[in-house]
Length: 146
Image 1 (cartoon, helix red, strand yellow):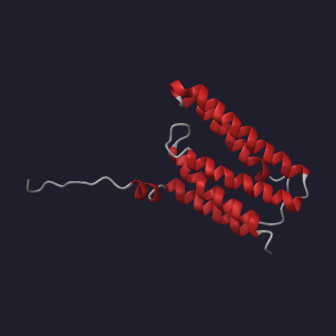
Image 2 (cartoon, rainbow, N blue to C red):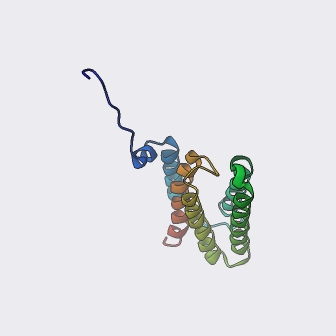
Image 3 (tube, rainbow, N blue to C red):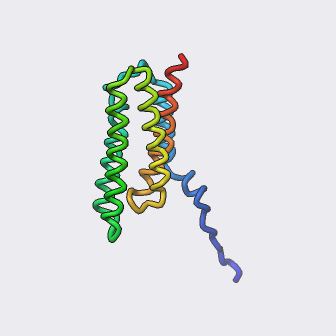
């Protein structure tokens, strides 16, 4: 057994921390956090969560195999909920709308966490989205402190 090297598999946490997608999400989220200006309910920030939910629905249609119908229904519910939050943000006072959109981004981070197994969307997408979503939500709420 001399000269034999045994490699231990990295723990799941180490694998996540080594993910370039995670660090790209952190970097872009940090840029969003520092660049946040006045809230505009008609900005892309309001419409990206439903767009992401639509992307998850499309991934479910192509990736989920035998459980496709269940996955499609779950993703459709997510799409309806994220779209409803965006519509609410458009019709309420912008000061409240900012918080509704922040809640949508926070909910999308939780949605990402629920999809971390990679069955519906690729794990790299979840690893990118979670920190990005959390930082965008933070930037929206932090914008009310200034």
